[in-house]
Length: 220
Image 1 (tube, rainbow, N blue to C red):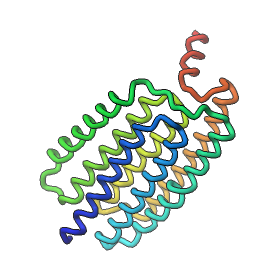
Image 2 (tube, rainbow, N blue to C red; image 1 turned 90 degrees about the vertical axis):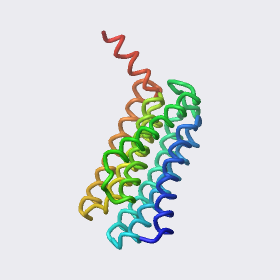
Image 3 (tube, rainbow, N blue to C red; image 1 turned 60 degrees about the horizontal axis):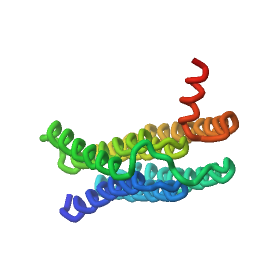
């Protein structure tokens, strides 16, 4: 691999981490959905570049799936769900944006330390992509934990899955059948989550997960 190929691969993987921080910073639901679409687009470019670098044509299928479903279809559906449910456009957070961003930086530092120390003999590109992928995964979890709105938690889950795809493709890719299975699993999960959101809205007249906690308290 040439130095230029190596640098571009790291630029794209690092860009995915940067967009994850942009997701943490958002306090408007429509903006969060748009940033998720950008997140999926950067993932598409990263996977396509890995296909070029690794001479693995089947990874272009993964890139096409990410572009079609994650960067286009899912954001459009989420915007439609927000409009149909009449969801409040501001995102309620458990903690402030400042502490959340600091926690995110701590998680990225932890990811780098853990992966780079446990994989000293691995291929340099693979081990550093794994470090970036773990960062994306943990930042996705942080989005889920620090947001009270169910739609924003869904977006956190989807961005977490983007980190898993980055990890798999960086480690010399996945078999094509696995990629297709993952794509269908995500579609099915998204359909189930969509039904879940409509049911929450119908029952509680809100998609704030705090309503579920209050309901459980009343049942007790």
